[in-house]
Image (tube, rainbow over all chains, first blue to last red; front, side, top):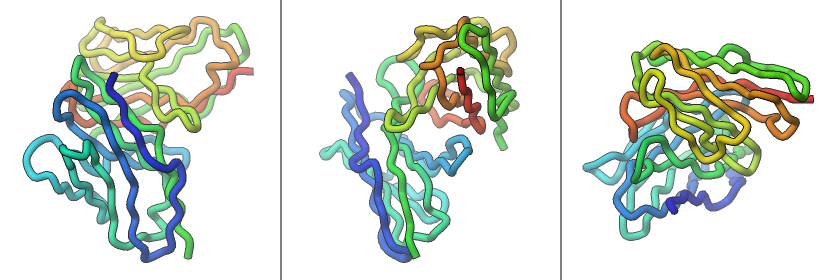
Length: 113
Length: 112
């Protein structure tokens, strides 16, 4: 069965530090990949997506992610964390059969000053 | 901008009540989804619909039903609410079946 694994339910960084949120997936065919962000008491907002083409994808708020097929990974990075980046982040992949997405369990990012 | 709205942000219901959660999208999307979100479990798909009057079960459909009479509206129904259905419920819509989904703000349901 397809799955999405986000390594680390909580990640803490200092303001200005590199942000790295890890996502690995299992899929028999290259999927579409997504990162979403959720601020407290809000719905999910799309950060970035990979469908085809360039494997390094840039998103909003300075985030980017790289699709690595050989590693079945789609890690999210940001060179310099800002206090406003504190939120929960979800990785998602498209299902090979049917519709809808499969979401990881989420990673809560804390940013300290 | 795609807008997905949900009828209530917070809802408190009693065990055994019938509960309706409404979701409306304004972008003429074919596909609509209901998820529940619980701490440590992420988002789990309850039901989705790919056309008016069409629906498919997701990963956790037990205890829920859905209705889609109009393209823009997708309702989640808890026939007889139970305390283990206390959760955050998120509605989403998408243009394509495997494309990005647009989410509503969520309804936090408490069943007492």
